[in-house]
Length: 249
Length: 241
Image (cartoon, rainbow over all chains, first blue to last red; front, side, top):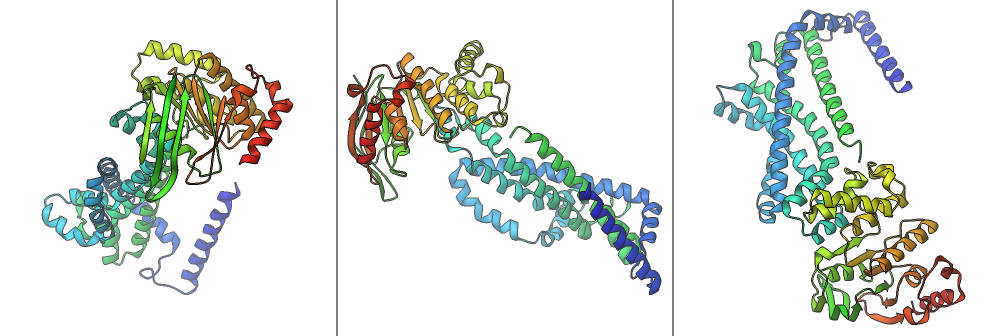
């Protein structure tokens, strides 16, 4: 119980001091709004936030799904084909270290008619590498003794893949998935900053950006809060999936 | 009859010589032990005999096919995502046996290793001894003719080691298995084996061959471990090593 009590108490104290600081020094709301104003803003724009959250959440989830499929396929291909591994590994590293924001303008040109696709591609590029890296590590860490049993009984490549390598790499994959899910959100938020669109398709990052332009600092803080909650929701969903999937490991 | 024959077998790994000029013969139904210091290439030797790796020099003749060969390792090496029953049935499934045959053979091995009440348990729910018994059951479920054991009891406590060793000895005799044991334990080798090859440090050579069948009683019982002759043999081997 103390695990929760102390952080909650700490948050209450910080919020109280923040409120006190704003009142005592008469800080203008456009510079630093009071916590109460941020809470009011959350309620005032709740429909807008809810709709925007759904957009960001959908982009993130679709990106994670694409990353899982693409990442798994790439990992399997490079693990079973040493030539391919040697040929494409350097490029995977180059794409990984390239700042994702720098390719967004290019994606906007290519998919200007569909910003949703641009957001998904950006978030997918951000989140695919932890999956590839985790699965490759998982494959390489497969129990050598078990592999000898499969070899001695002349198991086919497919038998080894589906009955040994994939289940063995599951703990690694799920760790990668947790990192990947966080990066997918970062990717979708970053992409929204640059490629974000107004209207019904806007995500939370776009609301945050607009709040900044309009000096609605209370709404900006509220948007930050919503993004954090989104991040927490995604984190706990994948943590739950990991615990459930590894219950027998 | 020679079931396995090694002639001047050497094995190098990237210039490092692990095994040097090994020549030996193993008869069908024999229980052979390889004793030697850590890292002397005993496990490499098992891999060569099984046909999973090839020698750098020399020739290996093995009359047992891969399908008739089974492994037991130091760790139980079970699949954590599968139940005891599914772990045991793995070799039969890989060999493409039908469901009915698999069910019958697995049930036999579950009974033989007193695991019938744990068939639906996962490895994490088992004790060290039960894991090793599951591993042994998996190795024997396909009724192999050649059993290769790589320090199979090293991770078990003393009492469990003896119990598992007794089970292996009994099964080996009962099924007329050709068994090859790699171990650090002198008493274990003396208790289980008909013949012991003592290996030197890397690059490993055979420094002594001890024919135990001639010196020891035909029927090895747990009481044999307490006999004076058993202890004398262990002392002699320790002196060689």
